[in-house]
Every structure is written in structure tokens, then in C-alpha cells.
Amino acid sequence: MQDFLSKPLSPTRAYSFNDCQLLFRYRTIDKLPERPGAAAFKGTLIHSVLEDMFDLPASDRTLDTVSGLLPAALEKFLAEEPEVAFAIDESLEWPGGASEPSVESQQLLLSSARSLTAKYFTLEDPRTLNPSEREHHVEVELGAQKIHGIIDRVERTAAGDIRISDYKTGKSPKPAWAHKYWFQMKFYALLLWKSEGVLARELRLLFLGDGVVLRHSPTLEEIVSFETEVLELAARIKAAVLAGTFAPKPSKLCDWCSFQKLCPAQGGIELPLPYSPTS
Image (tube, rainbow, N blue to C red):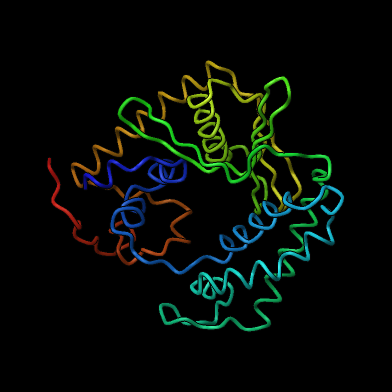
């Protein structure tokens, strides 16, 4: 338990506690196995290609060239992480041993990934960009609480201005569902502000699913307030861990949950805690 509490808090882990405390527990404390998700893996594949794109000379950062990177990237994932086969081919039985996804399922994935890559090229011209960092890991301490994150892309101007960009392979959210995306982006802005003392001038979310770019220019007051929000959330997580109490939160997200049979809110039986609570 103490090992868990000493780990730095990421934006995904922090926000997932708000989504559902019991799901947070099963994923981050019990670490129960889940079938790899098709949408999540497709996002990972495209992220890897868009990251590698900037290793190419600027003139080679074209749609044809970047789309051509996808098959090799897929082969590499299958070789290094065989479990992604279950995300690619839904006909494979889970759980099970290492299996090969069908050629048809791989081609279907690549076709969808090419479409999303093409949509990216309608949002910006990578030949004109020179990111200073990609997949940039930052870790800082907020008092006794460590936080960290991996930022898709950071761009810096000669004047010291910072722009943070993040790729999303889904569609842009309705305003009521946008909070979780801005939580992540403000988390990144907080990390850079605490580590470098510079406030990002612009936060950008690039949604490849529908070709929408959302922008926000955070204020210092906003990021200071967000720091308080993160610390309060970290305190709530610590209290839940120490007490061993994780409340389920029924919502539309339950339809996609892997642990419905282990959730009392869904008629299931909650697993015993894997540790002894202290309060």
C-alpha cells in the first residue's frame, strides 16, 4: 500500500478516480487483467507514427510517407507486445496465450489508421513544425505529492513561449464531456510550470476523429487553482487507499467496463482488498 502511495500521480490515474473509485482500484491497485482495447491500441499506433514522423527530414513529412510507416509500426508492436493481438482481432478468445490476429483484422486496423492519419494532415502541416520535445516525460513534487506525465508534443519559440499539443484519435467531445481532456492538458501545463517556471501560452487538442482542434490559453491564476485541485484529489485518493473504501460510480461508462461482475452497483460481488487498510 505504501509503495502505491509513493508512486507519482499521472493525469490519467488522477482523473480515473473521479470516473469511478472502484474501477480505479481494480486497475491501479489490484491490477486486474483487461483485454486490450481496439480504440486504445489504434491510438497508440498512430501516436507512435506521429512521433517518429518528426525524425524525418521536413520535406519527407508527407501523408504518403507517414502512412507508409504504419505497417512496420504495427509489426513492431506485435513482435514486442504480443498481447495487442487481442485488441486487433476481436475474434481471438480472451484470456489466452499468444495468438496471431487475422490478416483481415490487421488490414482493417491499418485502413482506419490511415484515415485518421490523413485527417491529421488537414489540421496542420508537419513540414513547418520543429517540436522541441516529443513524448516528453516530466515529474515534479507538489509538497509531499509527486506528479508526472508524458506530453505528446512541446513546441518552444525563441522568445520562450510554450505550446503543448496532444493528439486524440477519437472525435471532439461535447462541452459537457470536455473537462477530462482539459484536466489532462492543465496537468501538463502545471508540470511544465513547476519544473521550468514558464506558463504554457497555448494548449491544443487535435481530434483526428472529426478533424477538430480545441485551443485554450491558461492563466497563471487558473494553473495555481488547478494545483490546489490536484492536491485535493491526491488527498482523496490517499484517504480511500488508507481506508480501503472505493465507491462505484454508475454511469454510461459502465457499458464498457471490464469488471461489471465484480461491481456491487452492477449486481456483482466486490473482490476482497489485496491489503489491510489502516483506518
